[in-house]
Image (cartoon, rainbow, N blue to C red; front, side, top):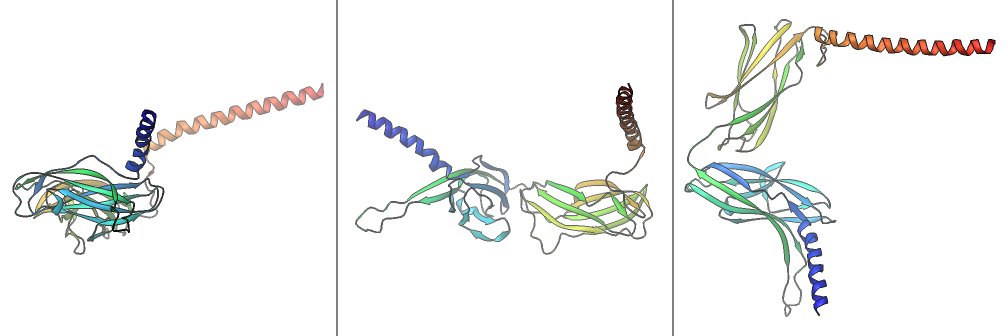
Length: 308
């Protein structure tokens, strides 16, 4: 009896990892320290299927933040979901949005977001007890609600090239990372300067068709196409300010050149490259000379030996 009990306990512990690891997600808490009342805050859940078969993943919410929480597929932030299909050994990113009600009191609120899979089916016999086991992994949510607005924006500014052919557009990508506790629709003031003279100055509104960048979310807008017609060849400085309610909240800049003819690209020829290339070329030539001398010496010895 004792041996049977021991083996039973061992078998249970061996089975537990299989149950726990069937559907997994990152378990570090979601912490939002300065959630403004009426604001929306976005996070991403990484869901992993280790079950060995295709599964239907059920999403769940619990606690004080349950009514604030909705789930979305990354490509569709209009239609909330409660479940989704996940292929075996697959991984999915699910967007979770917390919408803090306007009348929420300041304070700390705790909840949970869960991902799981139903195991087993209820018994069809009404006389038998119905058993349905749901395996689920929860992730804790901690939200501190405040009435103080904070603005913080990070932007990745990515020019298509730093050497623009004369007369063509300067194409620049912008990826917003909103660290504020409010949604943002930044405007862009784009200036081009040559020496101390401003040769281009324009303000671009946030795209009409794009949703605002939610708090804690990232979003890339369509690339700006800045005309360079009328600008002479030479080096320029692009100065960019990102505006919120008419006020600059972030500034960035980069240097670029306008050139006629073919564009050299990232590996531009200059004195630095020249002085690095020349010694390297001399070393390669010296090695080749030594190799040819060795080959010539061996051939000479071979010919001399045959003559003897």
